[in-house]
Length: 257
Image 1 (cartoon, helix red, strand yellow):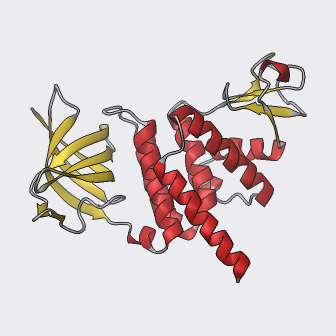
Image 2 (cartoon, rainbow, N blue to C red; image 1 turned 90 degrees about the vertical axis):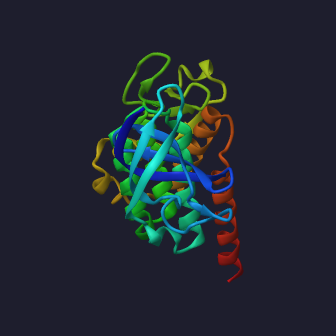
Image 3 (cartoon, one colour; image 1 turned 30 degrees about the horizontal axis):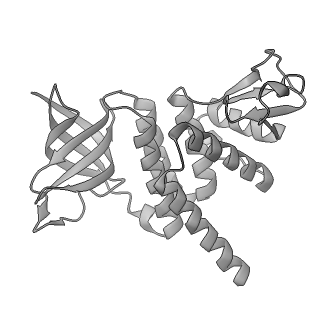
């Protein structure tokens, strides 16, 4: 077994046997790594801190060649990101971002840009609109993972600079008016929404988050990304369903007040 060391974000941790945890991390050097942290639960109760979701650690683990589950021998906290727990919507958003990374990435597929994206999101989420951060993160993550829909030209004829554009969730691509019939479920897409998505991909993260989106455009992008991800991942993630419930409760409380 090789001994490895890396920075790592805790994506989730689950009880394992009597006193251990099965921890899923996303590391800077190795991508997604799952490992058992032995003896970190006292009488079945996790010790607070180290393996909490969103925590940035430095871990040492024994890499097993014939298994995707390794042995975490050391872990020290580099950053806890406690502001992510400041309110329910921010916390629910952080859980969604973590689960999304877990679902989109494969074990031992190093991708430093995704690690940096997660660090950026956890750092700035408490100070930004959670809804915008979700759009930003989904778009950048899909781009970095090579899964972003084809948004440069019509999939049917290759035409660019379209005045009227339609997005097909099934094909993950744009169609022009002439080719729309090739994907009957394609829906009209606001050019402003398309431009905002392109900016998120092309600009640096610090520039991209300074965008000021029209509420209608923000909602349109949100529906597009949620539908596309749900289709590709075989349904809405549990954390996404919970986030939607939190948003719904927040909206109701605003209307009542």
